[in-house]
Image (tube, helix red, strand yellow):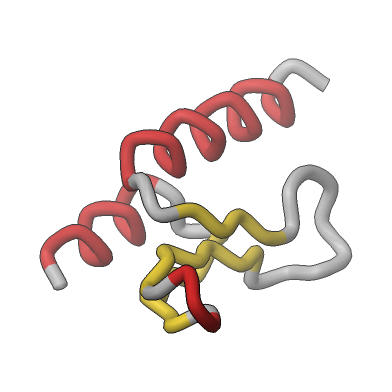
Length: 65
């Protein structure tokens, strides 16, 4: 749960969860709260560092627009 709290604090535009996805097992899911906002809508991965990197790049890209 501390991972989700850290992600929520770092990326408040997203809601986070851990979901079971078929035979692949548990995955981290980030879903944008405002579906009309620009940028990523959903990120699904088994690797928290990958999720953090993708969300950081999206945040930086949206700031420069």
